Image (cartoon, rainbow, N blue to C red):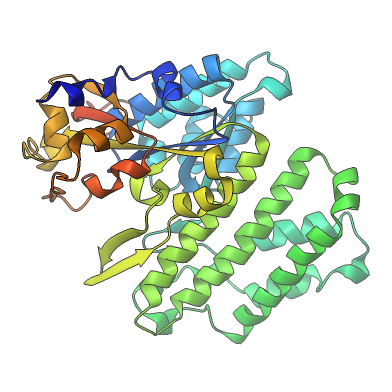
Length: 408
């Protein structure tokens, strides 16, 4: 391996990571190339601890349901609920079963013990209330937003009564119909009731903005932040359900774009709070256009990272994660001429890579992007090197032994 490539790497720690950046960003995004591997989450946890202790970061945001995440935030900030209950109900995508996620929440709660509110760590989900199989009912977001406003503004300003909301929403099963993900005719998203709810949600969100001076004065900062979250989520969920009912060929592309738009707006709100570590799939956080194959189609869209980067500029930083092997998933040693292969030859377990220096060292003859034998893993695209502020390389990802906490 050329020595100039080896010279682009460092030990994985917060000091070296911040040394790659011109200044501390409001949002420091750390991506992963696959989900469900605790070895990668252990790297995330270690970096977050160092960022907290040395760089003043106080929030971590994960690719999980933003409304469920409020349960985790309540636990880490004030001890509400047991750790077992929080892990079961506070994280979507079944990620509460992860030992590394459990350790993150446990450590955050322990860190916050005895600290003043302004110095406590915060947890946030920044994904919508969505799964790959469908979307949640907009009930929680809509009714919570309506209740917040009804308690603080004149009733004549509200676009409808709470009873009207309940009538239009109907049962949650209408919204969560599993068949609707693949069959737009099974979706409620373009019904007369859904169309009216979209208008009501827009009116409620507009009222929230129009009454901001008053609402900020009569609310705690936490109440105001959550009301804004409910508004963003209600609008986004209803837009997503509308897209699920779309019979056109662009349906899936629109759905993934709506999801990342929801993510981006949640991240921009977190940036207002203070320095935040963001953790999600590389495809959501990269600056370039995202793509994936689903249902036999190539989908392309602007991900949350691209949208946030366009808004924040240097206040957004993206560090990708690449890896060598996941042998228990059939991912063996990378090809020697791939980016992963060049880094794998260093024979060091974890390295922080100066991605732009590596890009310059490789020159115009970029290694090809390797193909993955496993659908759940997306190898790093060398074309993205110059758009990364850094890269974490994990040489070998090993299966985490089953534990009593995870049952895996």
